[in-house]
Image (cartoon, rainbow, N blue to C red; front, side, top):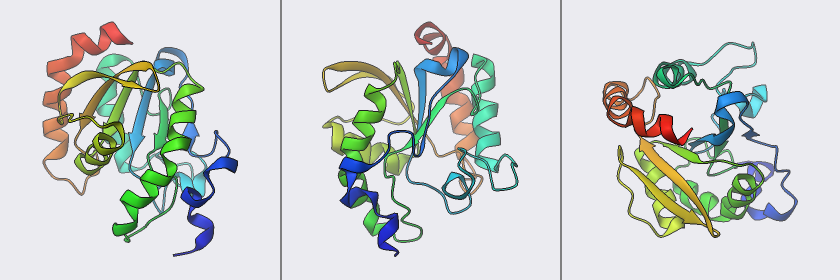
Length: 185
């Protein structure tokens, strides 16, 4: 793996706007949190869930389907990754990179007025739990404290089409917590 992709080793100089799309309009208070930059996504395009041709990726389309009932979208919500490093298929590096990038993540959420963090994927939630010393469950909306600030957190299944049952489960989750989410945002 290219050492230039390992931001976890030099988090002090990492620019807060890199791999951090701030929300706009109603999405200003919502942050979508992924695992790590995808090979064909914003690592190359500079825009969350879009490819270099400006085409919305399948994961972005699925997220938009989930967010539409809340009058939100990938384009209006904040978006970042737990690991800022590109780990590719080297999933063994993922947790180590997330630990190293945790100070960056905390600075990113501190610089915006997020109220709701939506954690994308069971593995991402597992790592988030370890970093926050929590025991959050996928599909359950809870409040957590990070550096003395309270956030509502909802873990969902990863919206990638690779996860065949994830979207159906996510639609059920969003249907169940919709009213609570509307009150938060």
